[in-house]
Length: 417
Image 1 (spheres, rainbow, N blue to C red):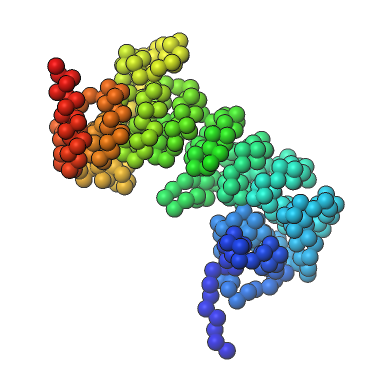
Image 2: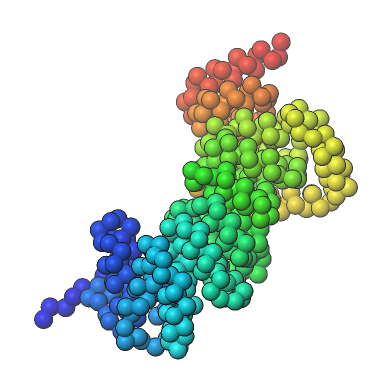
């Protein structure tokens, strides 16, 4: 008999096939629940944890339970999960019965978790609230902070579902957390510095990519999200003007604007938010390696911001000058270490690090005419040189953006008159 070539574990294959509509919900559940009876399929490989979808992750987690015992029959489990999926009226009768029967097999919490993931996937608020009445507060917290719930709730974000999950501790560290990277959502182990704010910030980065981004962000603000320089810088790469305006309106500390690279990031890849950033408090000529702009300059760029709030923030910075300097030195060191990263490495090869350039330098080098025009309209200075002594006009010429170079030359000459 020919040996069957191993493929990916069928939990993952089932999840993908179900998401693409190639198999129905019955087939999807059968393919996964069979494993709980000890069945092995031809496409199974040595068991490994997956990050496919929330429901497949929850069911697969049963097999990693140290005291798990194989079941003789999974018909009741399937009936319960199908009832959850179809919003059947017998859920409240089935759930207590099934979960109690599974206690000797040590997978009752995992099947309960499967019910919660279905509620998140289907955006079923009634089912979600009911699921959290089935166990005690410690178990609720455990369920709310697990990876399957994260995956299920962020695949199709819903503000109301997020609000409920956050109320049950979704953002509190419990040994794992999620991160956004080039490959997408990644589950990582928590380190000693991981905080509630780090969790909320990563959720914010997920939120800004969704069509209901402003609603999602407002839910996060209700649960204590603080807008930091790091969040602004990361959001600047992809946020739309309305989203960035929402973030700036909820930024409580002006010092976060002083240390954020958001304007530089926007000048490179997201020019549509430059005007929002400048109107919200960013200075057109800011450099990461320079001192924060003066209070006079900040006043010019912050139309409509509360003068009392600005004065209090300036006074705080003056009284904490040593700490601010130390923080800026740390930022400079971190920027140096980050030179190997893609964006900054490219700027480095051009002859000067990103941190020595203003937004006008970057927009000119990238050929972003709209960004250049916006920056000039907002008063960006054309004579500033980077660490290699190059102006924005010089960079535009070197890169072949001659229309931008000519515009910069004309504006520079007009301002000198």
